[in-house]
Image (cartoon, rainbow, N blue to C red; front, top):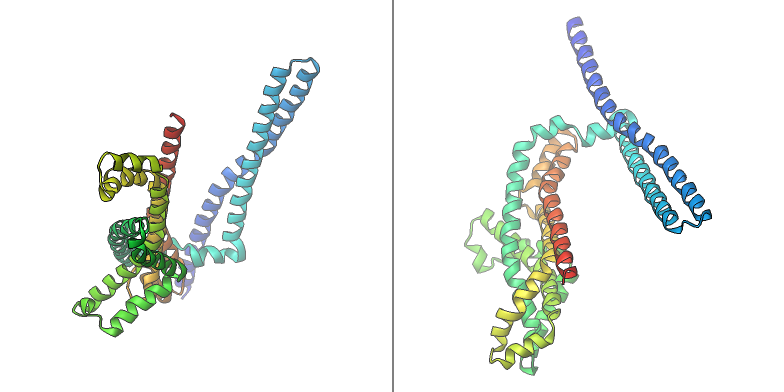
Amino acid sequence: MTIAMIWKFDRSLQVDQRHLTVARIVEVPLALASLGVPLFGVLALRSSWRGERLAKREDYQSARIAVEDSKNQIWVVVGVGLSALVVAFIAFLLSANQGSVRSVLFDWSLIWRSRTGLLKGFWLNIKLFTISEVLVLVWSLLVAVVRLLPGRACAPIRFLAIAYTDVFRGVPAVITIYLIVLGFALAGVPVFDSMSKDGQVFWLAVLALVLVYGAYVAEVYRAGLESIHWSQTAAARSLGLSQWQTMRHIVIPQAVRRIIPPLLNDFVALQKDTALVSFVGVVEILNYAGLYKNRFFNLSPVTGAALCYLMITIPVTRFVDYLIRIDKERIQAR
C-alpha cells in the first residue's frame, strides 16, 4: 500500500514537472513579446519627435519619412501587443480551474490512443470528399451552362436549373442529407436498393453532398461565365462557331481560370461538411471521435478529429491565397 502511494506521488510529481516545463516554454516567448511592446513604443515616439524636429527645419521630405517610420513602429506595437494578449489569454484558459480545460480538450495521450480509429474514419471522409468533388465539378458546370442558354425555347429548362439552385441553397445541408440518405433507403429507390447497406449509405451521402454543393458551385460557375465579355462570344459566333463550340472553346476555359480560388474555397467547406453524414449513420471520423469520447469520458478525441481536418483545410486555404496573389499579380502586370 505504501509503495503504491509513493509511486503515485512520484508520478504526479513527474506530470507536474512536465506541465511546468510546458508553461516555461510558453512564458519565455510571451515575455519576449511583452518586452517588444515598450521597445517599439519608444522607437515610435523617437521617430515622431525626429519628424517634428525635421519639419521645424523645413526638411519636409525627411520629416515625412520619419513620420512613416513612426506609423510602422506603432503598428508593430499593436500587432505584438495583440499577439501577446491572445497567447496570454489562451495560456490562462488552458490553465484555468487547475488545468481542467487542457485535460478535457487537449489530452494528447488520449488523442494518440485514438489515432487508429480517427484515421480510419478520416479516410472515409476523404473518399466522400474526393468523389463528391469530382461529381460536383461536372454537375454544377452543367447547371450553370443550362442557366445561360438563350432563347424562349430554353426557358423551361432554365427554370428547372433556377429552381434547383434556389431549393438546395435554401435548405440546410443536414436536412438534405437526412431526407436523401434516410428517405431513399426507406423508400427503396431501385438504383440504390440493390446495393449493400454500407454501400447504399455511402453513395446516398455522396448524392446528398453533390446536390447541396452543386447548387453553390453552379452559382460560382455562372458568375465566371458571365464575367467573360459578350464581345468574345459575338466574335466566336461571327467566325461560324456554334453556341456549344463557343462555350467549350472560348467562354468556359477563361471562366474556369477566373473562378479557381472561390471553387477551392467551396471545396474546403465541402471537406468540412462531410462530417454531417455522421448524423445518418455513416461511421466516419466524427462517429469514431464520439465513440472514443464515450469510452474515455473526455473530449480530446474530438479535438483529434478537428486536427485531422486542419491537416487538409489549412494547406488548401494557403494554396487558395497563393492562387489569388498570383492572379492579382497577373492582372496588375497587364
